[in-house]
Length: 420
Image (cartoon, rainbow, N blue to C red):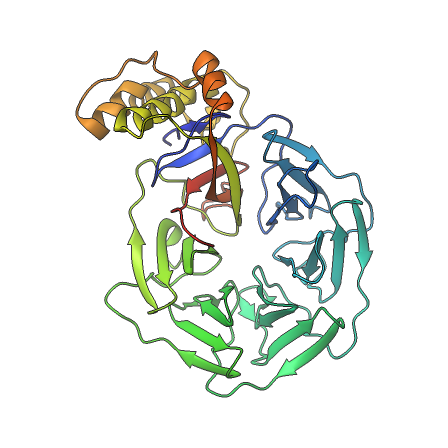
């Protein structure tokens, strides 16, 4: 297992590199099927945060909530009762209920759920949401699609590898908390679970999933304005069949990562241009995250320093520092399942695989930089006093591979700048 560069406070990430996010405090233990939700600060005295909700491991289902403060780069736990522990649920926000996270469905050790609960992030209180109409049958559904005040669900997990047989599109109107069964035109997707559902403007994109031993690679679009399903014709480049993958929307593009197929877990990435429905493969710098499925994923925003010069030397300095921080990780007590777990590495592995800062920089520019060039200490302090800019990143946490390894790591990937 290779070690990732560490993104410290006061450092700027480089494109196409996965970083371990340097955090203080005790974060979530190894788990799968949990959710990650980015919540923007509602007031000037608050910070942007990520809420990690639920999940499970072979021993238990979690009812806890972890909060990642993105300004302080620190973990905390929410001391609140009332949440019914679950995994492979959907967690979502809607514009008409700011400061609220809603949770639907998922599973416990005794079966699947179809209830709705809400978390007031400011008050730190859970509530059971009273809904009207006919809700979907209990199911797992690890993604959600929000268009305005409405959230949509299609198919989902029933038991084991089998999906629910329901081919209806379900809509929860959060302005009235009423469930509706939609009747779209066109051919709906085949029943499946572990599929990805995300929304962009007035369209919902459904990709992949599985049913029994069959893995899907198809892409379907539900157009809310036309109330119709359509199947997107495959082009030259497209993701392989998969399920239990993650995806986010950024700048009218859908970013897809990981999952599993018949051969095991995956760690590749693709992005979909939603204007022409064309896929392109994302070429990550190595090391990539360990192959994984059933992880938590969201987009976040971080403030990072803007260097006075835009030269490549500035970018190298941050990457040099980030890579050198991987050596310091080995001095910590790491738990199995981390992206840089001590238990996963022998002494020879460390010598051969740790990306020394000058080696990585030499690869980038064909020249050698001093390992003393870091963005910690005095340099970091200087940068933090200067101009900062806000960048968007993908964040993933936890998940597992198909050999039984469960992860507890938190990794980030820089997203391109642009208008959201």
